[in-house]
Amino acid sequence: MEKLVWDKVRQFLERLRCEDVDRESIVDTKEFQEAKQILEDKYAIYQQSMVNIQQAEQEKIQDYVEALESYSSEECQQAYLQGMVDCMLTLCGAGILKPKQELETLLKTLIQSSC
Image (cartoon, rainbow, N blue to C red; front, side, top):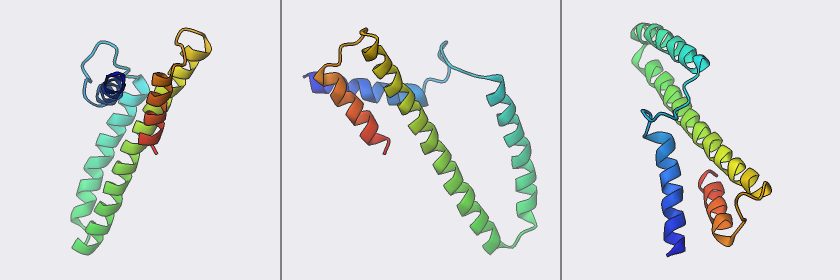
């Protein structure tokens, strides 16, 4: 039963990072918004430029862009999970959380799922 609970906690943390973008605790920095705007501006230029390139070259560029997006997504997931692990370890080190077997199992699961 306890394993099921910790599995649900892990799943919740992963969903929380990805799905609930309207919650009150969302971190939305000025730098993120500026980078988002720059990306949108550059995407418009990218689309216009792709029209002037041969199909074979477009496909190569699109493959690279998709690989870059996938890498970026995984990099964000890894950073998020690392932050969660660091937070839990900090709470354990401060004596707030007791490093029980269940917590160690959850941490191992989070670490392994991010590899």
